[in-house]
Amino acid sequence: MGSVKDLEIIKKPSEKEFGTGIFSFTDDYSVFDFGKMPETIPNKGNSLCRMASYNFEKVNELGINSHFEEFISPNKMKVKLVQVIYPDKQKLTSNDSNYLIPLEVIFRNMLPEGSSLLSRFREGKADFKAYGFSVMPKANELFVKPLVEFSTKLEPIDRMLSETEAAEMSALNETELIQIKDFALKVNDFLNEKAVSLNLVHADGKIELAFSPERKIILVDVFGTLDENRFLFNGLNVSKQIARDYYMKTDWHKELSEAKNSGKEKDEWPVPPELPSKLLELISEIYSATAQEWIGEDFASARKLEVVLAEFKELKEKNNW
Image (cartoon, rainbow, N blue to C red; front, side):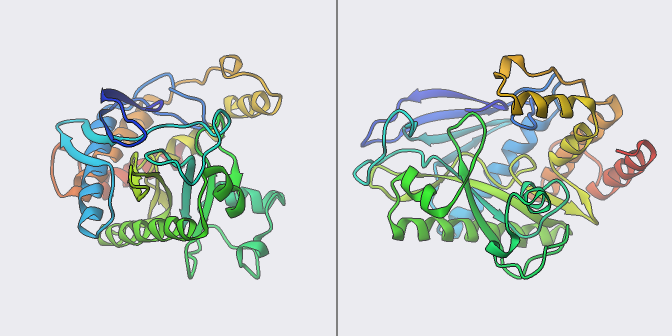
């Protein structure tokens, strides 16, 4: 459960048995860890649920096990549930099972503008040489091999982790850590191939994983959508990054950063302004058009993605967003 989807628990999980739940994908959206933004994006939940369900079905055919059970039209997904154990409340051990691995596993094929890693390189907070680069990578330059990183999942604000920290926090042995990286790369390969077939470039994304009751690694939550991943079309963002880019040029983003850096609680963070109505309309259609072409089904009567993006590009350039 998060700020953009709801969870109905049908059966609670235990240490030795999956539970059952229903995800309901809402039209809410969130940027910069703020939580629900003031307005909704029409048809977003429907689009993301269909796209995510399609992805689970396809990776299952590739032998990647997950918690997905079935798509329930128009915006629900039945899933197996595992325990959520917060590491700051209970130390995980190798004897535990059926729990959410408290990590986000991030894969990167390039560093688009807006990438947190690109910002860390530019600000000197991360050493590009430590990532295997001999020179600073340029924005939108495809890597020869994808990068895999780890961040926290169950903390108020995501925090980057080394492999050693990730393994210790999650009670992973060396073999399990390798398996997790292999999982991420297999999912990344699938998304790359699918994106190319639609003339998209898959820039980066993330997955979440869990241990089953038998302590087997499975794919959970949602992946490969415009909220979890960044896609580009002729250099244009085709993801939630569109909203991020708009807000990054507002006073609100500066005020939000100051509030976070000063240690203020979330209820003290400044309230964001609403998106311009035309931008909101186009973002909605981008979600629908991408999902339609991704799954090969016209469920929202959206225009071709290429046409919608051409209108968005014109609006973006006109307003210097």
